[in-house]
Image (cartoon, rainbow, N blue to C red):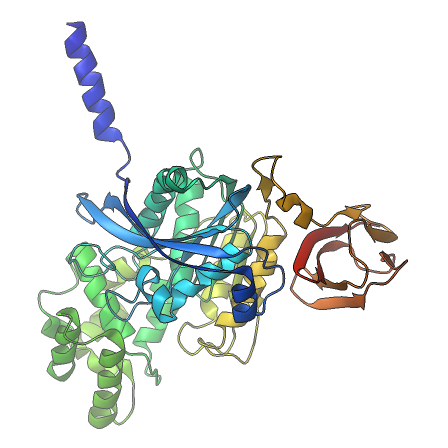
Length: 481
């Protein structure tokens, strides 16, 4: 009888274990600290980076185990304990346009090099239906799967750490751009709402994301405005048909025949998203006189979606809004007012809703008012880097190692009137940046100038960088009067 009970208990435990397991990890390459500093021109890069393609298990849309892939990038100094950073990528043009592949082709995966150089163990999931995932159509801007694939990558990380002797602490930073902004917010919501005992978000910075699929993005879709990214509409329709099965029976139910044909080619993998977008632009201009995406849609469907809030399309769109909650971790929404792909109203509506619901520390920041979607990447990413540095903690794994010599000692810290740089080399170049990344002080140190006066500086967090021959030392300075 006892053996039967034991078997039943083991079977129950096995049935409820998380789906994730690390399957493979493949070393792809490395970058030195000097290479990263030259490539990104970002202060505070302290480490080189080693990057790996990984595969791991998750559950697909039917709840069946699937294999998915991603990229893990780690700092090259194994003597430290690093925070984790999870970056969600933007819209993929095809199944292989993902971090674990395009990092070798100059793609978005390179952002992971930057984060590793700054001292984060960086995770970049490829999403369900992309990379090595089974041949299901990628559930584009589907909040639940964006979150679950990322969570299972976090759960698979300890096995990777054990394999390569990597050490991480409890800190967890979340970010992503465009679709990745939507995915980062979905992940943040899932962790704080349903998994608070498993993970704690240290800080989050979604960037230029379509957080309001059912309102802001729906209004864009249903408008008669010119919009030069019409392929996003069928990409979303195909995604939600894959997820919910209620959007259409065949493409001609929603799209006029002239447009349904190339959309089918995209679905079949004959053309990629960029090719579909170019084809649809040309067809709309030829057939309708302007690139107005609503002209692709069957008139009766368009009228039904406009008039019936409970139309299956409207239900699916609302189901993937990601802002109806109140984040408790410090959160920044970085966006650009002139974004031509993802309207800035997404960030403002998300901010207002989250603050009204009780968000603890949330600010939306227009990082470059005149930049379009592509131009917004660098200023948004720069602001994210400096925002995260306020909270980042890197510890030493073994006291027998020497890298602590790179740590800059500031005294006193917090400082009220002056601050001394206790182990700064003479003739070193001193740079001090605000928490927004603005250089506010620069000086070549000489004998007797290792102390500077800060009594007139605003209170807050500053980042200090001291460069001398062959080394860069960094530290955080807190000013408190």
